Length: 169
Image (cartoon, rainbow, N blue to C red; front, side, top):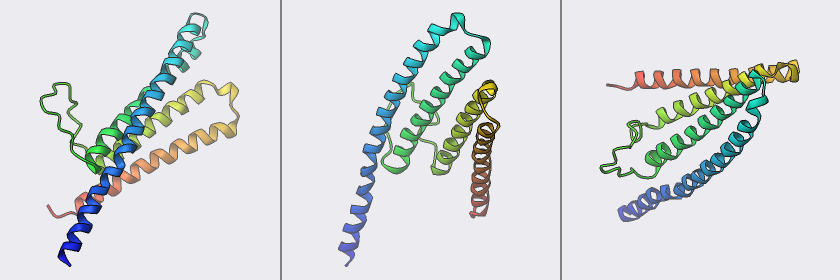
């Protein structure tokens, strides 16, 4: 019976590798996002000479939004892989970011949600910059959705703090 239990545990432990293709898929998503950022940059560069100040700000915010989204994908790839699949052997790599390998699942959740809040804030700012083309109802939805993300982030951080404080030290 003990050998059956051990075999089952080994099988379940090995199943974590089924997540690896998801992380590879996210690398491709990062490439797609890079392509979209390139398109956006070409479009932005073409209209800058004749654009109004607000249009330039909107273009910059769009590029920041794409950058935040790309950063979010990188955080998910590395932290998720290290938390759920396998540790990455960085060896002597001098460019290895200090945070990688140190984010646990709680930190990953909070980084994800704070990135989503930042992306949502940029979308909301873009909406505010384009008020003349938005209805009150659309603007209300932007604000409401952003507030849901903000409140969710606060509640998640609060519950993680309560959970950490409840653990015996």
